[in-house]
Image 1 (tube, rainbow, N blue to C red):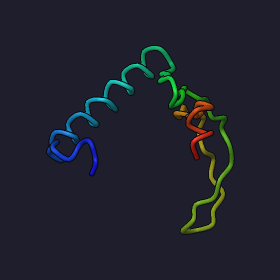
Image 2: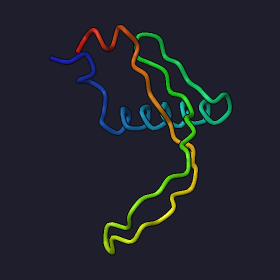
Image 3: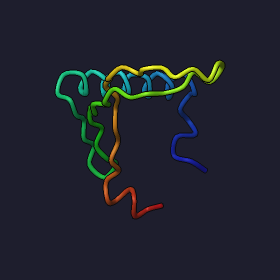
Image 4: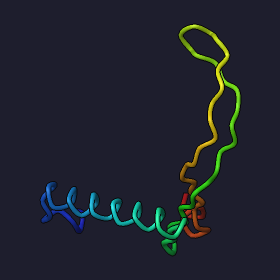
Length: 80
């Protein structure tokens, strides 16, 4: 039996949504979010690069962009 058996799926979904929204706001504001024993989310810059249109095979330029990176904490890595 799981500890959360008495929680509704709706409540759990709402809590998870609120958590990810909060993480997103923190990353946007501070450029990082760290949760001990889980890991750290950071903003990473991706350089402009060449790519291919998969439908036509035509070479295209992909603009520089930002993405979110994740580095797991040693505790999380060790539990796998």
